[in-house]
Amino acid sequence: MTSVPLLGGFMATADAEFVASLPVNLEPVVFDTPNGIAEGQFKAGAGTTALATGPGIDRGGIVYNNAHIRVMGTKLVQVSPSGVITELGDVGGSGPVTMDYGFDRLAIRSSTSLYYWNGASLVQVTDPDLGPVLDMIWTDGYFMTTDGTYIVVTELNDPTAIEPLKYGSAEEDPDMITGLVKFREEIYALGRHTVQVFQNVGGSDFPFAPDLGATIPYGCVSASAKCLFAESFAFVGSARNEALGVYVAGAGTAIKISDKAVDDKLAAESNATAIVCEARTYGDEMRLFVHLENETLVFFKKASDAAGRKIWTIAKSGGAYRLRNAVMCDGNFIVGDYSARYRRLIALRAVGRMAVRHGAGL
Image (cartoon, rainbow, N blue to C red; front, side):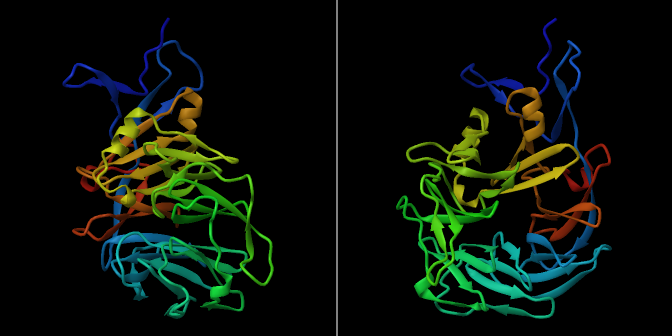
């Protein structure tokens, strides 16, 4: 008996051409045991519960020293388990933030500025040698940033100081640096068309050296269009003279996980640099969310592996999918409502169906 393919669909275009149709607000379930009827099915995702209203649109979050920290509007805030929001300071700017922490402080990149929160006070790094901060990570005692041309590290004994003689660069390709990723004790400098790998070698100059031969011949469109995912990291980008796709980094290469339906949506995006990627893992599934302007594309790693093909869906909250920046704390994923109207935080709960009042869940 031929099984019925329930983990995807097709639709006819105006030109009578059959194209893939991505399911909306559904999650795949692949059957462990073949039943001769279907390889799997889709189900409704988790529901949502409103948690709190903040001082502005949600821009990112992190758990630091067992505290739930977020940036909402221009405010750095702490969120209690009951939803009480306490303002900690002002980091200005707009758009997604980058947050990472070292041994004694949390760093926040907001627009092109860098701030530190030590649990008691918020300070801005004002050293003129820092330059504009397009992305930021912490590694081996350093806070590392990029201005698109250079890779900058802070001083080990003073994270507010920068020595310009210790600038580094990714010279495998002249493409600009769009972001930074730390993975398995290595630094990945993402360019627009290549990804160069660095290792800490110490010394009195720039302490990181390129790993020759490890360059990935695909690049990323922006700092927000990548995230750690599936024991590696995923990104939206391309090689030279290629269309945009979604990739997962490998050893000296990258594996394309997007299909034609997803690639077509990426190609239609008016501002690819505004794409945001985030990963959410819970239960037995790894999910990659690729947030576009008007909808969000979701890739299911475990289901794709089990089914032997790429499984993508679309997430929407009426219009665009508004739930962003998931942080696991206090037993729930807490996400921000990406809407200037609501300015709220939402707890995602596995209640078996979508909570229509608050839009799509996980």
